[in-house]
Length: 618
Ligand code: DGJ
Image (cartoon, rainbow, N blue to C red; front, side, top):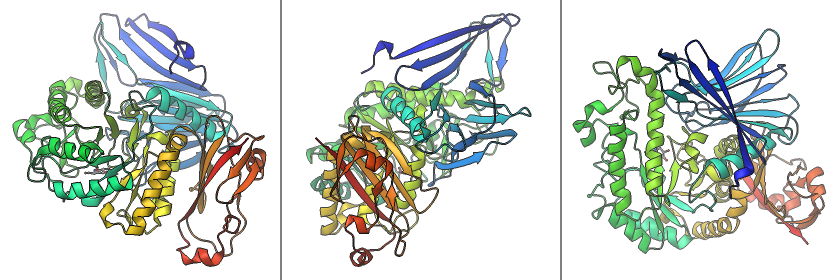
């Protein structure tokens, strides 16, 4: 629970006498987290108009340049890869000009010392609570001092302030850790999971869901959906999510975005009918929307062709056949809210997946004159924010999961309303090792949508065991992205066990302290672990990508345990002291966990994983 005295804010007032401009710099510090939240507000009190061309949320100078810069880079289906580079003279930056925080870079950077590791050493983190265009940069000057700036991207940004008007920047969250990258990440996890995120679901274990996207794509009807639901229910799944394709005449991606009423050919009794039937089966019902987009082939577009972003008479690009609704205009947001409100208020809906499937281009709003176009990108994000605000206010118990072609808008801005986010469209377990590892640099386990999908995997056709897929997906919100009717009886039994396992351990996984142990960006293996607050329970995940022949003994030093406690370690079934596990390590070699080579080679030796449960013995 929040306490009034857990944070305090210093406000510094500045005034530029000449134009009569005032500014407040906000610095919030926290009793239990090594973080500062920083933002600025600019107020025009003088008679003259001023134009803001660049208003960063933070600017910090360091007296030296002996740092490495960490950034999260990527693309669709390979989001948030960890990249580390030595700081050099000049400017190095990450940014987005796509209207969303993007798959390509995340609104985050960190400076670490060369010797800093996951568990030791100094690091400074910078994270922007914003979902739109951003710039984060490190500037090293000729005297070897380093300046970090971060905020709304100044390109195409321009904001006129008349007398009496003000502008508030998004917050940047600065973290310092002298306990390595894990120390930095844990500070972000604590703040973002339990203070930034809000609402009914914030502190609750997340429902185990099944989503029909990879099971059916657009090709479904009520009967097919209900057969998925029935089987999923028998396996222990708690929530069914109906993805894209339920509305208008949407049978492919060329039409109907913007028409948020049910396709009665697929669902004769509409969303209310299917939702009630899913509830009658004993499962909760969730629904997909893509509120910000429209297809030209839709009633909404035909009625309001001027509601999309773009200058009339100029060429307009589409992305996946869709155009971006002008969310900088209140009437557009209100109209979408009206449609969504109707669906959500008529049916028993417990969850909403809010998708967004294209970057923005040719951004121009016909709602304002040419002089105010510099406000449109930011106003758009404020429109997204307003729609989230209205929906979460009207439906406080609905769990929102954000999504943007997978992880194209995985940022703290949206975590405020949607405590979880679809981490990536890439559901392959091996790729997910990297994606979830990178994402965890800033974002808590409870925020990462992670599902077990079918093999061969739909993104890269890889086959990996059901066990490997679940062992990765457990470290997130957990669910399934497949047709359970296509599982063999043996696989169904395994899935039942997985769901039982997750139900038992999800509080530990989603709300425990998370530690990265071995980076998949540095070699053939990956390891991470979670530890309960009282240090009595822990879980270690170890993953090896390719099998090695006659491999070495492999010990992994754990973190976060009580050195004086004795832990029973499952799988190897041994009782070991905390300090032994911390400093000697956990032996994850095949031989030591009872897997003899013959048995091991009976299975595919690649893409192996092991989970170890640690329980302290009194
Ligand atoms: C992109 C999302 O990331 C997918 O999970 C799915 O919802 C599709 N969009 C549907 O169009």
